Length: 242
Ligand code: SF4
Image (cartoon, rainbow, N blue to C red; front, side, top):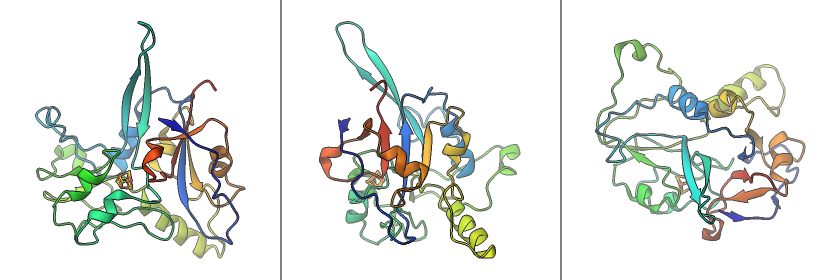
């Protein structure tokens, strides 16, 4: 993990959006509620014990363990890891069929019906945030009834990843339009943000300086993962104890 200056892009740009997330590692207790909420919201299959050793389990949000050595006193950090929704995403550049792209609001969606399963994007993502469906997804009978009708089921042979719960953005836009107003801070919330009991996750429009997420991104504790690669992630981490 490397440090970065507070977000220099933050500005009021006349109602446009650049969606991003701030994760406060000082608040995170590594409870895993974000990962569970994400899987439930986005119809991610549970995976099987045989999938796990082959790293074929699908986790759009994963709580990663990062150990840091220090004179026989190793420090272990837990890092919640969704897709970083990079400003310059390497995954989109290698897709031969335009099944993934950076949209005007800064999100990096995945178009499942276009995906041909070549897995170039899986290899191009330096954050290992992309997952390939090696098998047809399955759920126990009782869980099938709990699948989210707003989110597509991904079939065998396509790649998937976190999309910042984009279906919720559409709902927030529809609600705002029905009420004749612009979308406001807090209208569009991700499932992981909503589920976090420690309120470690902030999400919203990075380009509006009045939003909670833009203010959090200005913290001197701000850092990015693998910043030297020039991907410019829109997930900001706040370092512990600084
Ligand atoms: Fe693509 Fe990986 Fe960046 Fe997400 S984190 S936008 S999957 S390169």
